[in-house]
Image 1 (cartoon, rainbow, N blue to C red):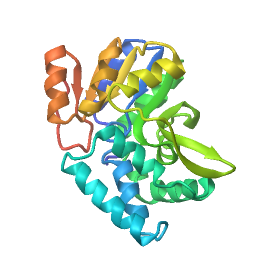
Image 2: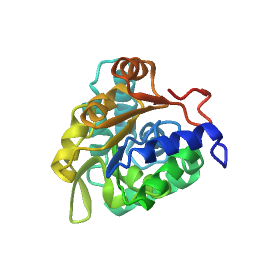
Image 3: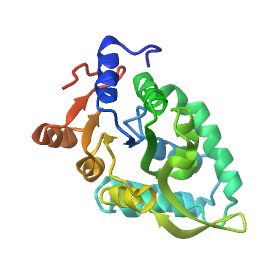
Length: 240
């Protein structure tokens, strides 16, 4: 990642600020930073002895089935959180803190961090909406300038300090605009995402930005006239 945004990046930031959004919502993995923090944390913790061997074997096979299209996105996102049932919430939060610090802080796109800072400085209310678990997301978004209290991520109920398998929310696909309306209760002025699971959130906003998009989202963005932007460090250079 470059330390200072390029001229292209500065122009992108200015184009967003020119819209004077009052509410902006950001997807996280692939949008605020490169890579998938949820997948990375899942693999990382499975190799660290946090779970019994039989749980690790089940989880690895389950994720392989998900990648093969045999397990739905919402189900997998929920299970990557409920696998922690019975464990101490504080222990998993410490593990997530360590993982983010060691593996993901350097993955943040500099111009996206600067955009968040500039938006907040202008009085815009900035939120993160992610289908990764909230232990990782609440830690990671702090490094992007977003208040962890304004992160809507996959979450489960915690009882007496222990994680349960009772799912609170899975903000993926249709679940993203639903979470926004349930919690924030306003229509976003600007929304930013990178995958097909962000399409409904982008469509619900007054202004949509496909950032570092997968081909399916890029095609949809071109069709709908949404802005397509490739961050510095993404390997692409065009912003349209």
